[in-house]
Image 1: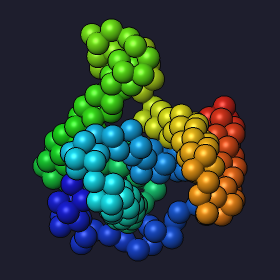
Image 2: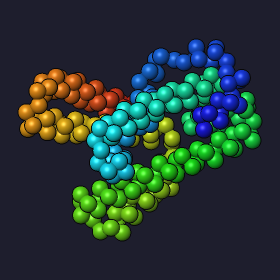
Image 3: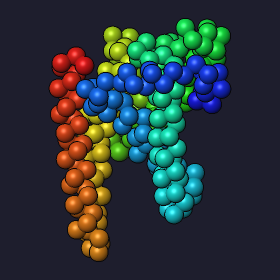
Image 4: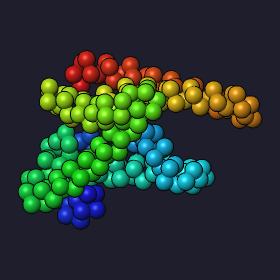
Length: 224
């Protein structure tokens, strides 16, 4: 999607639009950014694909995060540079006036494919967690992972930014706290030589994640 939009949109970028960014809303994208870069739920699937090769898994995780961050940054700069203050929540519809409906239609198709494949991956992970870890019936676990998100959408949870922001900052923030606590506990039991350094970094990370949860609730109640 990024390459496609870049080819058709690079000539429409106005650098003045990039100057219109308000730093007073600096924190608001935090949850969305965390959501776009978070990938802990898919790590077990990648490990299976790599036959348990931990060294290769480490490289895949690092490069995966770097690539995702680069693509997200490029997409953000491209969209803001083209549409400026007319930027829409999902980023694409605001480009229609500059790129035309035909180009946007192709972008929407790729967007749907990307969203659907992500939904499949996360749905499969949710199903396995409920099935393996919580002992739920396989069919019930599949139903929850597949249809609960659709149900929430039907009953009115349709604000794209609020949903992704809240999910990223709060739910994934709490997930990050749990992962950090578990990691530090394992390192302590293993009597790792770097435990003190890891504990300092882990503590700072937990403080930042906790602040993210609190601030996201504040902005959510305030209505962004």
